Amino acid sequence: MNPPHAVIAGAGIGGLSTALSLARVGWRVSLYEKAKVLEESGAGLQLSPNASAILRNLGVLEHLTPFALCPEAIRIRRARDGATLALMPLESAEKRWGAPYLVVHRADLQRALLETVAREGSITLQTGAAVAGFAPSSGGVAVAIAQGAVRLKVAGDCLIGADGLRSYVRQRLHADALRFSGRTAWRATIEAARVPVAMRRKETNLWLGRKAHLVHYPLRGGAIVNVVAIVDEDFHPDEKEFWSSPGEPGFLEARFVRWDKTARDLLRAALAWQKWPLADRNPAASFVAGRVALMGDAAHPMLPFLAQGAAQAIEDAGVLGEVLARGQTIEAGLLAYQEKRLPRAVRVQRESRQQATIYHLGGPAAFLRDAALRALGPEKMLARYDWLYDVHHAKSHQF
Ligand SMILES: Cc1cc2nc3c(=O)[nH]c(=O)nc-3n(C[C@H](O)[C@H](O)[C@H](O)COP(=O)(O)OP(=O)(O)OC[C@H]3O[C@@H](n4cnc5c(N)ncnc54)[C@H](O)[C@@H]3O)c2cc1C
Image (cartoon, rainbow, N blue to C red; front, side, top):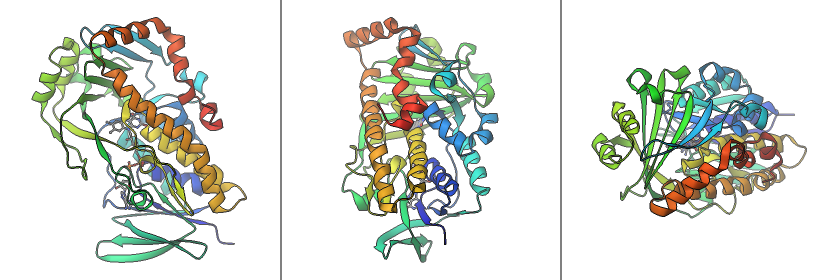
């Protein structure tokens, strides 16, 4: 009997992970990627244990670990003077949550995924090929692929829309629009030698200020420092676009003028900024229609304030492999995927939004937040993330 065949739209972190997850349970996978060349932005990614556990099962982690870094702690700091408000030690992360907490360069993760995909004879990856149409066909899905001027028709047993924030597949299933969240993310990677020594610690740092926050952590054994500055901004990107563009450093200089000097020195050390308008969507009522399923940013785009977008895409991939391995119909398998993933992904989407409000407080509300953070202590800080990071919670979907 021929193995079942999945067509996947999009070869981002979500699509590549799903291809591996399905190949592991005996599926043949055709991955179509719109971009001619697979490139990842020169930026970092926090990979929490709920995601690194799945990458380990998929055989990806072994290709990534040599380039990844385990931060010793997450330090939350006050913008005004750099005072530490809370310290979440990560030395026992793997023991507590079942897998390591890593920070990686996106390009390294993409390379590790591609290397693992290349070893799977049952996966084919076609770049410069966009999913441009689909319709139910006898016992499956007929998918139209646009490759330049050429149009192909491919028959799949199911179609997985892993085509990101501006998903074509989602557009066909839901009539909802992307909207600007009112915040922009400014990203830079800086050679460690240019960064103030105090800012090179093996920690993830989160600075909280009024209407802005700052995240930075070292990458590639500490050779570079990844910086993301997020600011509330009265800015009106073209609603259909939301692409990144070079950012004007003078803008950040002005916005962070009241921040502690070490933070300002870090921002000044960046040679170039890339500015991303952060888009948002309301949670979807469903991820699945018959033999078509959405995953990753296509299913649940989220603001990056819990650093979970890629992690949740990887969780989707893990569950898709589980449910489609079982002896049930593909439709039933995809519904089981939705049942397992939708409530959790929507909770993460909602909490990410809420996090933005808390991070950007000012005045007395910020004072109260800071006092609450100070009172927490390391154990309570860790416990706050158990529902999200713990491999067993993520798997059993009890949250
Ligand atoms: C500032 C910032 C910081 C972040 N930090 C973190 C973090 O620390 N940790 C974390 O887990 N997440 C983080 N994220 C989120 C994370 O980057 C995304 O959630 C994740 O990359 C989504 O992966 P994806 O595969 O679903 O989508 P994408 O990476 O967008 O991939 C979709 C792919 O589909 C392709 N495509 C589009 N349309 C078609 C089509 N019609 N046919 C074929 N291919 C198509 C695209 O070219 C693309 O390659 C952050 C995001 C931002 C903006």
